Length: 346
Ligand SMILES: [Zn+2]
Image: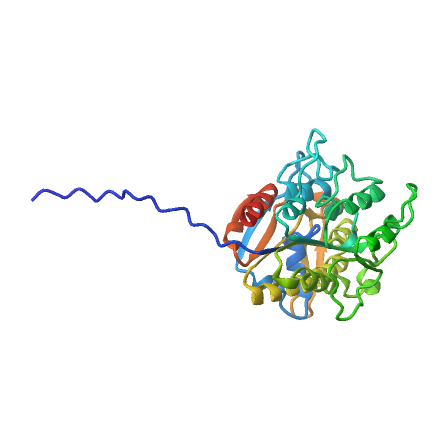
């Protein structure tokens, strides 16, 4: 009997379409590489919220140069385009690039931005501002914020919204636009429709003075944006992990990473209940060439060693939870984060 030809498969399986989230929370630990996370797992009193994620990938962080700055890497995640260091949501030809926040607005998604730096700092600014250079543009970025329809803005930088050389008082203007404007996150249960919370005149202080602003601001922003089951996109930056890296201070890095992780815990708790929220946690780059050099598990102590006081080109992790999380497994470019989020939002 002649051998039978193997049956030809004529139907090509459809590409599996990932489930789409109604909400996306993008969390950026500035300068938070693997060693920063590892060191924090050693000193933390309890397991990190980060340790609950099951979908994990690695991100290449370079800009048009191997070593990126925060403006270019935030621009890559916010716009899907590689650019030069210092550019805020502008391309290599200083062309204005649409950000994921601006795109979310076109879909009538609500939007919010939270940071432990100033709200006009490179990372948050790259999600709503457009400047050819990051230096000395705080007021300009604050003024650009006023042209947007972003529901929540929280971080430092009151002074950049108060009276400027242009004669405008942006705090006053924001109130007229319907924002609840405060300089403290201690507002109790009150959940306004739109809120600007600027907790310091310029850069927010370290955690000892700052307290748990970041976890509280993250939770409040979720409360505001999720009203009436709305779709939303929000960015949360743990901005000072990077500053600990620049200063080569392991304790600064781990206290900031623990604080950031508490914000992650709020996002994750919301997403677990909601089931329609994608939570992404990543870094814009690694800072300090940090390594876990010495320490004791028993004493919960760690000594970090550093190779530089600037950023490095080492890949950083990305953690994903919720609908679409499987898209973020494997090695990707920072620009892919934008493209994946955008296609999931469609
Ligand atoms: Zn930095």
